[in-house]
Image (cartoon, rainbow, N blue to C red; front, side, top):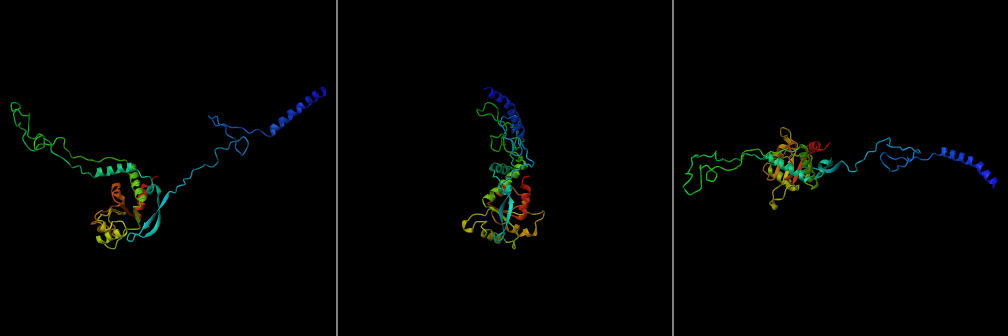
Length: 291
């Protein structure tokens, strides 16, 4: 028994030294915790006890949805495809906000109201201010002047007056409405992009026949009017190439022509087909594409 106890005393320092050496050779991996958190974070795999964060290169998210959509560019006279265009998704395939469209249409229609309605009050109509009968003793109701509203030929009580019906709208809201209308036309396959709007003839019958042949206007047998708006880009003076289209479209019911720089939400919305040329497309994309 004494020999066993003596041997254990001799081996104890050796075991302590071995433990110290092993702890120095292989340090334990440290466990880090974020500030203000009790959740343990495992050490990085690169080196023991070191957390390699943030990374050397910033991580950026990539949008999987492409920024453009495809659209046909057609020939104006034959409606044959000419090219495939890449148009902005935010302009022609964005969300369709009917509430924003309603605000823009109300704004545009209020701006077009003349506001010249007016009526004559009792102080403005012609007639005497003499009291027509005595106050008491007649047994009838009390009356004063013949110009009172209850008499024929008298003034109008609380009648309309000349005023402006114009309302205000934020520019960004109106641009959003225009994007929504263009997106609706694109989604309903009612947007036609042409290379140009050059016509050889200025005759109305030629343009009407071309619209019916291309499917942009109903046939005469349906007894329905066309609903087409032409949206070319016109300068201060009408270009010679657009004069024939302008002359030919004047006498066709339901066909309108407007400069692309003066495009309106209501005019585009109330027509079935929107036909624009390549220059108008570039202009609208440059204005409507959000930053």
